[in-house]
Image (cartoon, rainbow over all chains, first blue to last red; front, side):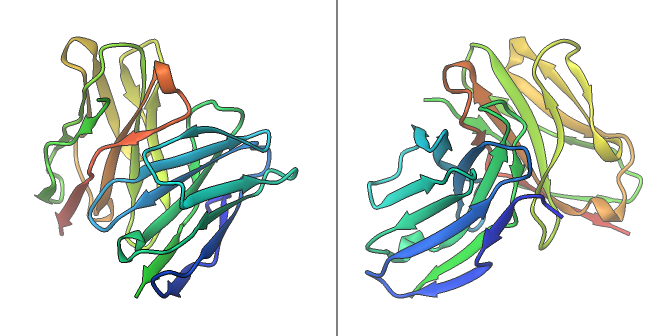
Amino acid sequence: DAGVTQSPTHLIKTRGQQVTLRCSPKSGHDTVSWYQQALGQGPQFIFQYYEEEERQRGNFPDRFSGHQFPNYSSELNVNALLLGDSALYLCASSLRAANGYTFGSGTRLTVV
Amino acid sequence: AQSVSQHNHHVILSEAASLELGCNYSYGGTVNLFWYVQYPGQHLQLLLKYFSGDPLVKGIKGFEAEFIKSKFSFNLRKPSVQWSDTAEYFCAVSFSSNTGKLIFGQGTTLQVKP
């Protein structure tokens, strides 16, 4: 059990569509980060949410947006999907912005 | 730019062999260092981490890593690998200027032959 729950586990979308991925952090954690892991690559940081605000952002276009709710859960939204957005999307949680994140099992997004 | 590099992309070992996976990072300031493992079909799991103190860090499952500041390195070691260590290993770094963000290496696939 990862402690971090992500849904759905798999998703297939068509180019141009929009997608929402969901994450429930480990109990007691208040900070959520999202990562994109392309096949054969290490995870790439998308952004981090703390106290319902985006605190840091990686090198991703504005098509990628997110939200954190008062219960610390989070959503990742991607608009105008491209084939290159196909990847494993990982959510990681921690207490405050301290390090040592716990990762979820990810959502496998396929764009066709 | 801040970056992390793992030198070995694919390592094949026989059981009981010793393991060392290399990890170097590009930044000269304060860093926090991590090794994660991803078993087939499973989520990323933290093997060990270094924040400060003793540069030799012991983690789970018999793994250890040594932080050598002068070489910007954080190599992962295990004296005797088992078939169950077959997995992908990721080195990750957070830099003092950006503590909330982990930068990952490309990963090393370890295959242990029984």
